[in-house]
Image (cartoon, rainbow, N blue to C red; front, side, top):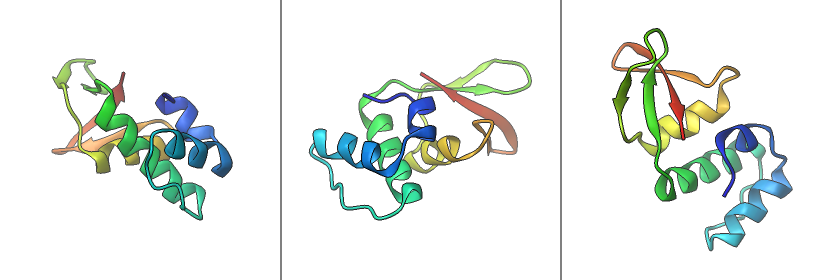
Length: 90
């Protein structure tokens, strides 16, 4: 299973191969769509943790598929959740 750093930098072929290997729909036509799908896959099978970017405190032991996908698509891996800057760790 790819980690978020790998998802963020993988090409379309690698992403769709990851989806196909898990039995997921692998017909995405853009890297953006494929990254979102692989992030959702990773979120469903992995144990993700959400941390406050400023304090490093654990916020929760889960993150929605939309938030997981967004964390892969930002350059720094930080997203806004409930008006807090947070990041996802595995």
